[in-house]
Amino acid sequence: MELQRFNRLSAAEAERLLRPCVDIDSWIAALIAARPFSGVDAALAAARQAALRWRPDDVARALAAHPRIGERAQGQGAEAQFSRREQSAVDGKDAALQQALLAGNRRYEEKFERVFLIRAAGRDGQAILRELERRLHNDAPQEQRETAEQLREITLLRLKELLSDE
Image (cartoon, rainbow, N blue to C red; front, side, top):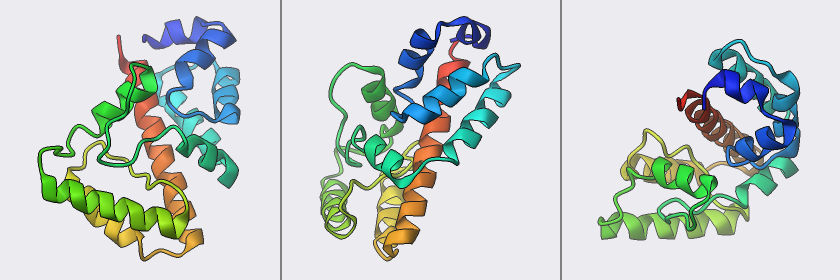
């Protein structure tokens, strides 16, 4: 969507457009309130600032919309479409990789009681697996910080894609 068009959307229309980026009400409200943006970079800077204010419960709620790494998001909504594009480099035909990701996801969920989240865009399946294995050694506070940062990266990439789509 062209940025100037985004700037002119009603609050309700802008909310519907932004929600697939991340399902955090305070972030969406902050971006809507900050309009109009002079450029995509200004919108991304405002989005990053708003994302730095996320609380752990905001992140936990947003994680509910994310599929496990290696699993394809279902449905035709914008959230599912973003997820499928982001995970496209994870080779679903590599059975050994799929099994390792499944086992790693299980260990992660047992340890941290939430889905493993990583910015998959720009990473192949082996790089994701290495990060999963590394992060299994984190303690809970460190992992909370890394998860929030990964969610911020995903959110900003989605917003950039959304606002760059002419």
